[in-house]
Length: 449
Image (cartoon, rainbow, N blue to C red; front, side, top):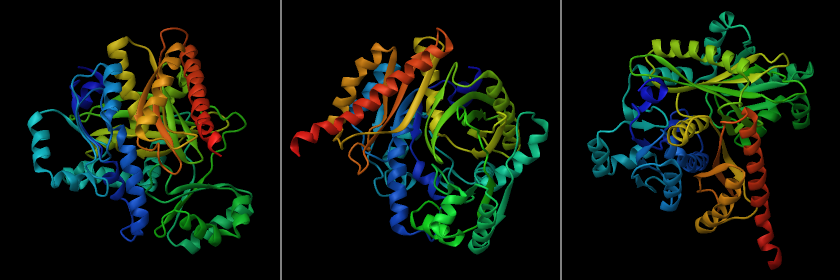
């Protein structure tokens, strides 16, 4: 099988291991407060529900959180999967690697299947070596920036934001205040962070409103936006201008076992502040010019990663400026939220015909807290309404429905065989329908007040 699917799993059904927390924790400061570490682990374990779609077809799932079989059955029907063996609830309060070490029979079962095994990301549990060394190096936003600066001269349409490092928090605060005094907005980053953690956009008004640079940094640490220690990166904020469409783009690719780089595609991400919320991929999602620029640059990044020994999935994220140039911001040497959208698109194109547009929405708010059964019933009522719009509804993250801020992660898919924008408009309509229905859940409790 040619292309990225062949490089990823050989086109075979695979074992999917949801080790999101394991991957994230290798970049935590060892002195991180235990309570914060536990909160971040729980959130990562919920996000690991995306393990259902770490490849176009799973054979066995290892999930840290408990997930009802009705959810995977729903996906299996729509995506025409074969039998899927699900092992959920393995690691509610620990890493997946530790949970597997305590279950030798399951580890032997996985090995005995003889199928490809895909993880969210590489950790020491899969062994040291050049691949893990590359992960540790280029997951750093400072090292990624250095690589971007080396490559950008050969890529028209790409501009690299200026970045500087401050080792002490006092120095960072003074530099941040000096930039604010000149009216400059700054993107403040810790070298490592995921899902928006460790990255924040600081406007002059926010800095002065907090009482200055030192007070702002203390506030960001207290609210767990930034880690309490370590260097900080101060990066130029790229102004998209009044038209914020195509503000955040990504391009994904796979480096095969032989080091060949296989492009997967470009997507338009939905980002709230600095927190990733979802993506749209497929025909019409990203204009051809921007997609081509992102592809060429991402492949150049991949060639460098491959030369340093990395194998597997990666992406390069971009923001756009007023001239619609692309500014690369980070490399993710692992699976990502957009990777799931590409997996779904590949599977749907295979079983229903080519041309699908897929949108993932990782945390659609719910107007009320719902137990799993009630959440399933709610989405089941929405399924035929989405189908009436030509959209397939797929549940991806069903474990946050009873959280203090209840939400559900979904994917929406539409056929792009007609005009490119028709599918995107159908997804917009289905998203609006679901958002309204989710908020309408609050009305269930009005009569009880």
